[in-house]
Image (tube, rainbow, N blue to C red):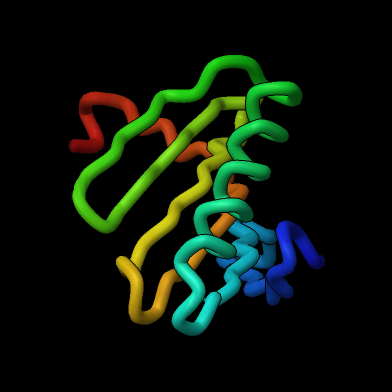
Length: 101
């Protein structure tokens, strides 16, 4: 998948014979502006697909999350300026009963 000038590689996580999580990851070597643009594109897409995000922004990290039925979806931008990384994740929601904690 290509988005905002970055090529995202998929990573699949399986457990119990089921697909539990998919991550698309891209590294924008020494190009923080490209990572910022790709993250912004993902956030805009998420807003149009799922509505307003739950967001968090710390120095060097930005995060936007949504819930779609039994799936958690989030975007993450990390790495500052040297090795900025953008990640889009779809993960099956894991709801636990309080007795399981």
